Every structure is written in C-alpha cells, then in structure tokens.
Amino acid sequence: MKKKLAVVLAASMAAVSLAACGGTAESGSTTGADSQTTAGAAAENTTAAASGDASLTVAWWGNQTRNERTQAALDKYSELNPGVTFDGQFSEWSDYWNKLATAAAGHSLPDVIQMDYAYLDQYVSNNLLVDLTPYIEDGTLNVDNCSQDIINSGSVDGKVYSIAIGINAPAMVYNKTITDQAGVEIKDNMTLDEFVAVSKEIYAKTGCKTNMAYGVSQEILQAMIRGYDGHVLFDEGKLGVDSADEFVPFYKVYEDGVKEGWYIEPSVFAELTPGSIEQDPLIYGSSPETMSWVAFCWSNQYAAFTNAAPEDINLDLTTWPSKDPKKSNFLKPSQLFSVSVDSKDPVTGAKIIDYWTNSMDCNEILLAERGVPISSKVAEELAPSLTESDQKVISFINDVVTPNSSQINPPYPNGSAEVSDLINKLGEKVCYGELTAEEAAEQLYTEGNKIMAEKAK
Image (cartoon, rainbow, N blue to C red):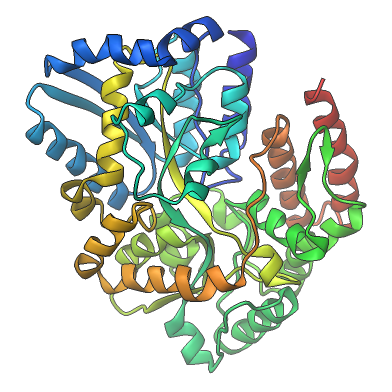
C-alpha cells in the first residue's frame, strides 16, 4: 500500500499543473486486481449485477456545467435501470486528488473514476485499475464504433484499463471582444513570438494583460518542447530534452511579461481556486489589471467558458502558440473513465462506461462537454443537438487541429508529478523576480533529471 499511496499523493502534488486534464488514483493488490479482471470473474459477477440492485460511487472533477450534466446522466441511468443508484462525487481539480489519496489509504476508492491519460501508466503499473478487456470481449462494454487508436490510448501492454469519453485538443480561449477592440487578429497556429507580440499590442491598446501557464504549466511546456525537435518533456528516468536551453523560452514569457507589464501579476492568483473556470482571469477579472484576454485550456472546456462569461463578452478559440505548431498540436483522449479495483461491482462499473460511450440518452444530456464522443455513431446522431459553441469545437478539432497535429506523447512516467510541481514553483519565482528565465531553466533541467532518475529506481 505504501508504494500505491505514494503514487496517489504524487498525483495530488501536480494539482496545479494540469487544471483541465488530471489523473486519478486507486488502490488494490496485484492478486486482487487479477482475480477481478479475468473473464471468469466478469461472468461470476454478472449474476449479482443481474439482480438489478447496485449502488456505486462515481467520482469526477470539473466545472459546474460538467457537474450538472454528469449527475443528470447518472440519474437517467437509474431511471432506465431501476435498482441502480449512484453517489456522485464531484470536486474542483485542486481537491480531487487529495480526496482520492485519502480514499486510497482506506481501500475505499470510488467504483468508477474519471482519470487522465497523463497518469494512466503510473496507475496501471501499480495495479490500481481493473482491466476492462474481458468486458469488451463479452460485449458488456461495446467499442465497435470507436477508433482503435482511441481505444489504444487507454491501453497498456495490450490490456484496456480506461475508456475515453471524448476527444479534445489543447485550446487557447480568448476574449474576441477585446481583441476586436484592439484591432488585433488572432490566427490559428501562431508561433510563440507572434503570441508575445499580440500580447504586447493588446496590453498597449486596452491595458488587458495575458495569462498563459497558471494551472496547466506542465502541459504548455510539454507542447513547447514538442515544437523544437519533436522532443518530449519526460523520458524514462530523465527529462527528454538535450539541454536547459529548451526551457528558457517558456520562462522568458513570465520574466519579460511581468517586467514589461503585459503579463498578469502572480498576486492575482493568491485567492483564486486553481482550475476553476468561473475564477479564471479571463472570466473573473474585474479590471484590466486583474483581467486576462486569454486562457490556456482544452477544447472541451470552451462551452463552460462561454457559459461562464458575461453576456457582453464574445469568446473564440485557437491553438496554443509554439515554435512549430504542427509538431506541438495533438489530439488527446478527454477524461477517460476507469473502474477502481476497490469496486465490489466492476460489471456495473463497465456498464456505466458503456452507457457513456454508446447511449444517446446519456450523450443528449452530456452534449459533448468532455469532448467529441468517441463513438462515430453517437457523434453523428448528436451533432444536430449541439450548441453553436459545441459545433465550433468540433470544427476546431476536425479542421484546425487534426490536419496540423502530431502523435500524442506516451503517458507520463513516474516522477512527472514532482517535476510538474517544480515547474510551477520555478515559474512563480521567475514572476516574483527571484530567478531569471535562464536560472529557472537550469534548475528545472538539473533538479528535474535528478527527480526522474530517482523515481525510475
């Protein structure tokens, strides 16, 4: 249990770094996992599930829009399946991991948990997830209309441990009302230099500042690294870059922006909840000094941003800036779902994931909030029901990102959570003038490599 809990706690340390993505944690022994995930165990548990009586806990993180839709979808499942009830456990991102860590310590993790691609390999290697392969093979979990590439994204060593609820991509949501006011055109696939130039121009004309990496620092740095020579931020037992020089442009945005006034002051975030869309400076800022014209997030969050924005603000979305956007852009499985090995009813857990994947009753409630549905049949049938914002996201995924993207990186290895925490701490020091961009980059390179080497032992 000590090793498993350490993984869970490490994930919670990274809470600020992946505000829109995230990871989950479960507990259980190898023996317990093996006994629960064989085809025989699936058949054995089917009898109990067939009685129709089941009570499951389901945990997820996100915004209020996601909370309401997810709970409504679970209520609909209960309506369609009398006797099946749910304890929905919704948390803000920063609280989610702490709750899971506590549950893991007591072998009482939720039955079904929302998790993220970045942490999949860590949890599988610690025997914390149920292998869903038997449920796919016996038809409990139908993936016939799903891309094999997307199914593979939730697989490790040929076994499926997680199913994506949708597909999304890195997205830069921006206040088009402000950019129009400044007479600035925001184009897709900007370079980092173009983004900085735009930020300076908007600040000069409107006083509105820029916010880039508060909340998703690790992901933005990862995307920037991909844009150099196709490098990865994390490799096995080390960082995946040749030198500290590749980190300097990332930290220079902080350093130059704060010095020159166009980057939002770090003190603004002292009383804000990391990962909360409602409190993001793009939405929450009440004056140019506390307001950002832009937010770095994920495409599936666009609808929540538009719902939270004041009526007089028009939002739009584009790609994250990079030296080479085509190398940096990628499609990502959005909010995967797994069954915890602590679950007493993995069969019903698998049925819930099947419901999210294939049921129109469910998806007409969720309305692609977590991303474009992975079932081609569901996506096609759902399209007429989607809002203008959701249609814009689908167009963004299909027309902007997909033709200009590269293969997603492998799941993060052990040590990535601690490095993520380091990335954030160094960024904060740069913002407060305690370190230069070059000094922060060198510390990240040196200390990050030490962390990765130690965690690989």
